[in-house]
Amino acid sequence: MLTLRRPAAIVLKPVGPFDLGRMARLHRMCFEDGWSRTDLSQLLAMPGAFGLLARCRERSPFRVDTLRTAGFALVRIVGEESELLSIGVAPAFRRRGVGRELLRACLERCRRAGCTTMFLEVAVDNLAAQRLYESHGFRRVGVRPDYYRHTDGSRSHAFTMRCDLALGPSPTADNGDPTGLSDRPS
Ligand SMILES: CC(C)(COP(=O)(O)OP(=O)(O)OC[C@H]1O[C@@H](n2cnc3c(N)ncnc32)[C@H](O)[C@@H]1OP(=O)(O)O)[C@@H](O)C(=O)NCCC(=O)NCCS
Image 1 (cartoon, protein in one colour):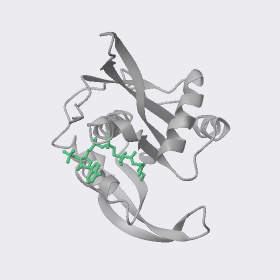
Image 2: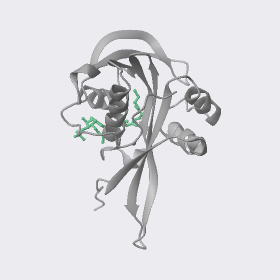
Image 3: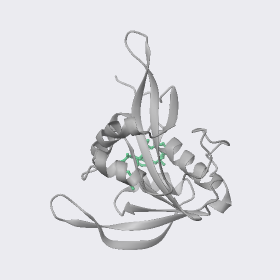
Image 4: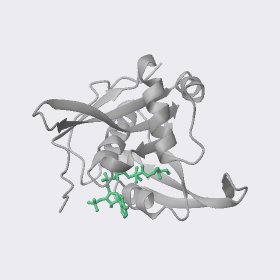
């Protein structure tokens, strides 16, 4: 029987210009309306925006360690508020702690940049993401009717969720900024 192991190590890094193609491929794996390299590059060029990539160290059949890109997160900081614009983990790496690690690092970086809150939108039927967010202190604060439009033309509602960063790291978080980039992005 095939048993999925947790990754031996999750390595986070800030998204750079050479990561955009990889990130667009990941985004397409996670969402119906995948964002292109151009979309991502424009988002990351917004003032206060930053992106993180998660890579997992895996051992190949030839006993060589390789780093495989597993997930991403995209955030924007405006004054004391931050917004999680998108987060996704490739299907093969889900339920192995990658989403948690990405979210924790984003919250930590925003907290260190002086933010007091983080907002996000999540589809009302996306229970996996809602559980992840709730376990990091996010609470529902509103509903946005017909927020998401699907490729078949149908629409679905979203919850707006908010996390109070002044309350400190979530119980699952450890200390430190694993990206090594704790400054407010320019
Ligand atoms: C949501 C998503 C990012 C979670 O990433 P992940 O790496 O699988 O999550 P983790 O393994 O770190 O899980 C952390 C916690 O989230 C919750 N969770 C994650 N997947 C879940 C699932 N399928 N069902 C229920 N809870 C789930 C659990 O509470 C989990 O903790 P546990 O494993 O100790 O029970 C991933 O499922 C994904 O990319 N989905 C598609 C894109 C998406 O919906 N993004 C969010 C848009 S708002």
